Image (tube, rainbow, N blue to C red):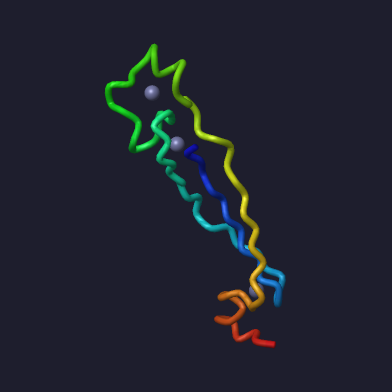
Length: 79
Ligand SMILES: [Zn+2]
Ligand SMILES: [Zn+2]
Ligand SMILES: [Zn+2]
C-alpha cells in the first residue's frame, strides 16, 4: 500500500540526527486508489468497497550511520 517514508539519519560518531524529506512510496496494488495500476474505470461507489482509500501510516526509518555527520565535517570537527 502507498505510504510515506520518514527517514532520520543518526550519525553515531557525533550523535547528531537529521530528518530527510518525506518520501512517497508507491505500491503496484490495483486495489489501492493511489497506485499507478489502479484502473481508471474503478470509481466510487464501487472503488470505495474494493480498494484502499487511504494511505498507510508513515513508516519510520532510523538508520544509524557509523560516521560523522556532514555538518561536523564542514565545521572541521573530525575526531
Ligand atoms: Zn498503494
Ligand atoms: Zn478502486
Ligand atoms: Zn555532527
